[in-house]
Image (tube, rainbow, N blue to C red; front, side):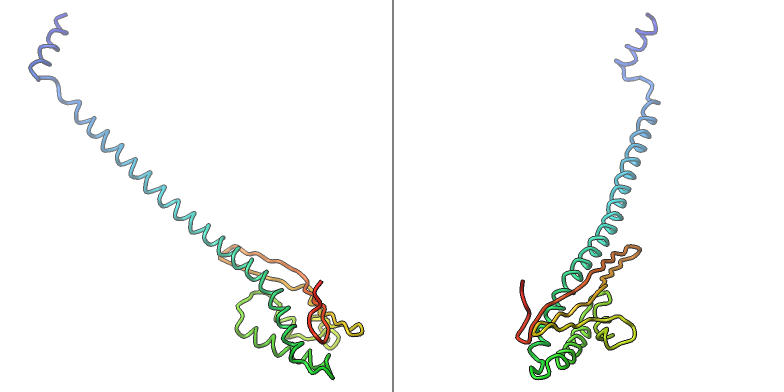
Length: 178
């Protein structure tokens, strides 16, 4: 009882042992340091992942753009070549115009892949590489095919590659829509 009474008397007078406040203050400082460290770690981790995600999003966007661009520009080049081709010597003048227009488009295009390369190689029937495009004629109907075209997009260590065939059917008057 004596000890209890002494503690109560000291407490009433404000003479308690104040050595316990230093560890409490140090505990608060260490806890604050840990919270701040965790907070900066989360911020840094999030921005690193966001950078990776942005890179992958850019890669997918470029891939989707090129995948849609190549077939669209193929049809547009064929349409322009049909309009410019001489109707009396259609097949030869069409091929000449097709190559000229594709060369002009290639000079300003940023599409990745081998589409324009296949056109530059020329008609399969006229080259030794057995590559390029194939133009077939069935009466008044022409078919232009480019096989094994690919779109290849890279961003850092990531890469997406897609292979496909292109084909368009047309006459001297324009594309045949199905």
